[in-house]
Length: 355
Image (cartoon, rainbow, N blue to C red; front, side, top):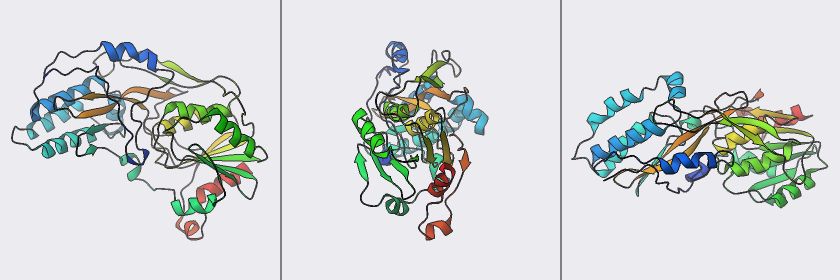
């Protein structure tokens, strides 16, 4: 069976928003079209456990974008991974066994944008947030939001008792309409400052992150860079392409802003924090973000299972990778004592700094 890399597969988001599905950056998508639709791999693999292993290892080897970063971070050697996993495949394996070993191999990448999809399971790696403090409480969140908050698309917002606006954005899975943003910012206009809470936002559409961030700048702003693969080698990349954010049309916010974060801020939400760090009058409070700085693309194994992987790396405006997340300006963890008293430590730190 011939494996053809340019077969792009739409994918739905993972549970709890832990993934982008099929998305593309408004800056980089058209630059990527020649790569995506001209790359046909003539290598043939059988629909066997060994064939699926060889196909999967090679897809990642030729098209994954973070090998150097992962080698520097924890010593990843993809050739060593091949040698270690190859003996584990044989013709007698069940589908479940085959899936498990392939999933284990992909977990070596420690990448939340790498998944293997079958009819009975989805392989995923969530170590980017599971191994860290949650720094978010649904119970406290409901206390701060109350019941009389406003709803605009994916945004929930209200005015706190110290005249600071509080906006919760738990997902970028949907576009944020210009009217929604105009109404929200008009409602919050009397406030002295705004808190934008993106904790537990696992991503979604880059365009949605752009739409929200564009209301906090007044001129076109360099917010980062991206690349795309130009060949099969681990270091075959294009030159860095600028990511520039244009001011949104409509109401724009001119006062202070605190963006609050935790380790579950991933993918497009990670990009949002990156953009906001380039805006004036913005501070970031909370925990380091979860990362996820690779634009994901998808292909298919001989047996029909879909694989998603990071294909195009993105960087901040200082040309530094954000794959492993970004540190806040004020590092704050929620304390057990505050939680017991019904106080969200991170929100209160943001309120203090905004005053």
